Image 1: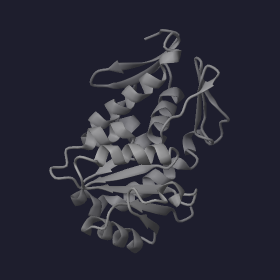
Image 2: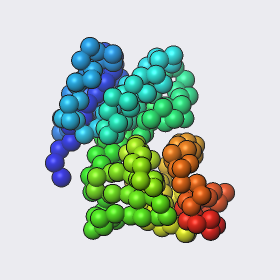
Image 3: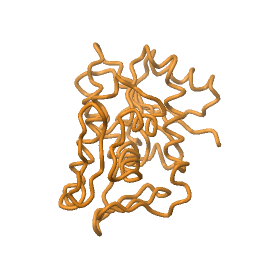
Length: 232
């Protein structure tokens, strides 16, 4: 596997310096830019594999993440929540982040999280031999990370895509929470339970046009099931 290129976005700070130093020690290549830089639109240019955004302002963090997600829809986004109190996990996920860490977690988990996001954007081993997945009127192209609902292509973030892909692979049966976490994040992360609910809400919203034939059913305390044709 080639060495991923990491785009670090954040104002000059102790957290940004620590992230850069840590990723360099792990032999990962880094590019750095400040938020709202005049050339922010051109910074990525298809040359980065993962974006690490450092948000330290409680009032602007969610706005910044929405901006990055709009600019780089196909670039996996990991947010370092350096805001006072660090209570923005759910709002940041809701804004489009694929993963959220606190600074105290970064020293032990940042490298692993970045590598996991990079692996998730390459071929998923579970579906590497399949041209497409079909569930009702939902069609997924795993290699290209594209989703169609009926005849309309609908954009999905990398994390939303992997969750939907996992549910489509096992449509008609309940997929336990733990199984979804391992497929998407590489491990069971209880602290991300609310985050998973946020992603499911996003996916359901995007599936509204397919509501008559496909739906995501919640089995409280167990997991989620992609129901096709109204069967639950």
